[in-house]
Length: 340
Ligand SMILES: Nc1ncnc2c1ncn2[C@@H]1O[C@H](COP(=O)(O)OP(=O)(O)O)[C@@H](O)[C@H]1O
Ligand SMILES: [Mg+2]
Image 1 (tube, rainbow, N blue to C red):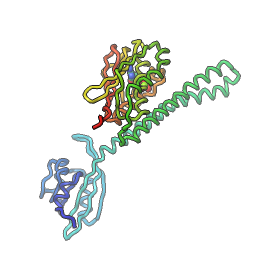
Image 2: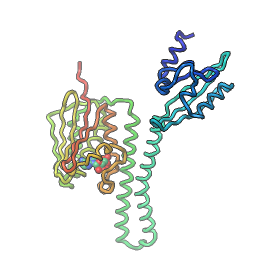
Image 3: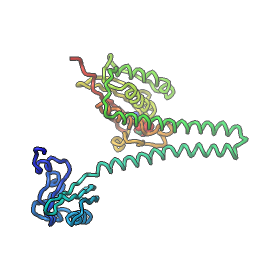
Image 4: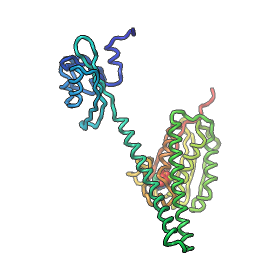
């Protein structure tokens, strides 16, 4: 026998719980239930607090002798919410029932996001795939003996196939970060060295776009992190700066430590981003200009990945920009804990 009262148990439960007697009058309710049903009063019919027929039917059935009934309760006002409701007989001399409510809103929200994500990813893959299939057909038929067309079409097919490959790489990177979400990375890494490595790697792209790449830091800055993830994050930011900010002619990577945090900033002097786009930039597949992004080999997943990597490191991504004045992306990370 456990040494707690039924009332204490009820009160400690996180989900709304209500007990009614054989007439459907409330005899007990916990705090969560009183929050959910502000009109709930002991000794008064539960039907006064909730008007949903499915829930009341389930309750009536249990009070009439059934052991368990489950149903769903959805409301649109004052806010949209959905609950799974389980009504169970409590046994004993007289009929009594326990109503338990489980909030489904979060599960529904995640489900909607998942469906959306799959729809977006499929759509992004279908476009280049349709183009590749179209060119294969043309090469098998009308352009069979046209050597010039063949060279040109193969070139386009290669570009489209590379786009699909990039998309799949980005999707896999995202899912890898998500899979490791619950282990905070802890390797001792020098952020300056990582930035240097990315800067060196992107020199050719910068040169091709006429962009000068500048790296500013004064010695090593140690953070606790995952090497591959941080490289990916920095690479995405610098690459964006080069690609979208090329007109500014310069991209500056700088590293500072401020109040126990490492801050890696990537600044460009390109066209910048209008304020209404800023809050949505880190959404998956969100792009200010889809055609421009595609043209530059973008997938729309880069900043979503950077944000994910930042939060995996218990850090954050800050974006500062004004239309016409360039953009600064800051990756803020906790410093590697000092000895002692
Ligand atoms: N430095 C920047 N200057 C202007 N716009 C940018 C910059 N970085 C990102 N953006 C905008 O944010 C969008 C999303 O970036 P990202 O998630 O990296 O996707 P992608 O580069 O694959 O399009 C880009 O399509 C672009 O419109
Ligand atoms: Mg990008």
